[in-house]
Length: 292
Image (cartoon, rainbow, N blue to C red):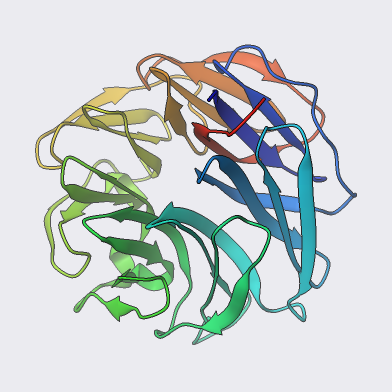
C-alpha cells in the first residue's frame, strides 16, 4: 500500500505527495472551510477543522476521493487537534474564545466517517495536540495543560503544570513522549503525568512542532531545530526557512509556510520550498493509504 504526505488548510484545500516534492493538484472546498489538523491511520487520512458555526470532517482511503461531513458546534465547540492510536482517531477541542474555562471535548472515530461525540472531557482547558504510545494518549494544550488518557475519553491531568510551561506539540518515540513549546521548552514523560528533564532555549525561540523521525526527535521552531535521541540530551542547530508544523516520512520532513508554501528537508534544519498554492496550509501528516 502506498505511503503519502497529506497537506490540508484554508478553503478546504487538500493535496498529497509521495515525496514532498511532487504534489497532486489541490482539491478545494468551500470558502471559509479551514482544516486545522490531520492524522493517518487504519489505511486512511482524516482531516478536521472548522466552517462557520461548527466542525468539518474529511476522510480518504486513497488521497483522491474524499467523504466530508459537518457538525454544528454553535460557534463555540471547535476542534483543534487530532491524533491516532489504539485503532481510533481522536479529535480534541473546546471553546477557544472562552475566559477561565475552555470547555474541552472529544470526538472518536474508527474511520473518520462515523464519529462518536462530542463528549465533554474532564479538565479546565483545551487539549490541542495529542500523541499515542505506551498504550495511552498524551495531550498538551492551553495554560500549560498536560494530560493522559487510555481511551481518549477519561483524562487525568499532570499535577503542578504551569502556564509558563505551555507546550505547543508532543510526539512519541523510543519509549517516551517529548513535548516542546515556548522559548525552546523541551520536556519529556513516559506516562503523561510525571514530566522531567525540563530544558529551555533563548527568549522568543519558540518550538512549534516535534516529530519522531525513526531514530531521533526533531523539534522545529523559529530559527532553531533541536535534535535528540532520547529527549534528554539535545543538540540545538540554527535553521533556515522553517515551517510552522512538520510531518516526517520516507526519510524527509515536510511542512507549510505562510502563505500556501510547502517546504521540504532531509534533516529538519535546511528547508527548501517545493510547492506553492493559493491557499494557506495549516496541517500536514504522513501515512499509509489503502489504495491509490
